[in-house]
Image (cartoon, rainbow, N blue to C red):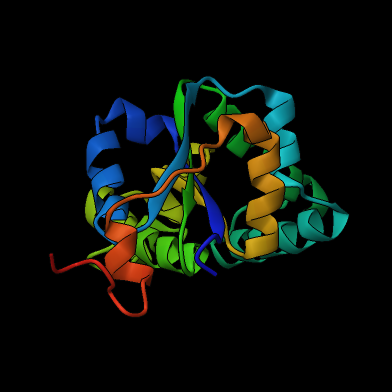
Length: 197
C-alpha cells in the first residue's frame, strides 16, 4: 500500500492560470511522494488512449446530453452516441491545446487521497477546500453552451488499475524515480526507530 501510485495531470487551464505551484503544494502537504514529472504538449493519440472510451460510454453520455437538451427545449440534431463522441473530441481538443504537467504520485491510498483533494469533475459542484472547488468556477452548463470541455484544472485517476494503465501511457518505467523521503520515517515506520539520538 505504501507504493500505490496515481496519475495527476495539470491541464492547460491550470498551467495558463499559473496554478501549478498551488496544486503541487496541496498534494505535497499530504505526505504523498512525487516520483515523476513531465511538462509537454500531449499528442492526440495519447489522449485517445488515455480516455479509453467505448461505444457503451458514448451511448451513456450521449443519452444524458439528449435528455438535457430535451429538458431545455433544444433540438436533438444527432444520435446519442454522436453526442458522446463530441464530448471525447472536446476533451482531446482541450488537452492538446497547450502544455500540461503530468505527475506520478506514490504513497498509501494515493488514488483516493488525490481524488479527495481534487474534488468532483464539475467545479461548480465540487466541495469547498478541493482544488476544483476553490480554484475555478466552470460548470457543465457553461461548457455545454460554449460547446467545449469543462475547464476543471486537473485530471486524476479514479482507481488503482486505471492509474497504472494511465501512467504507462504518459511515462516510461525509467522516467519514474525510486527514492526515500525523510518524512516516510514518520509516516510508515511502525516503531519510529532512530528519531531520538
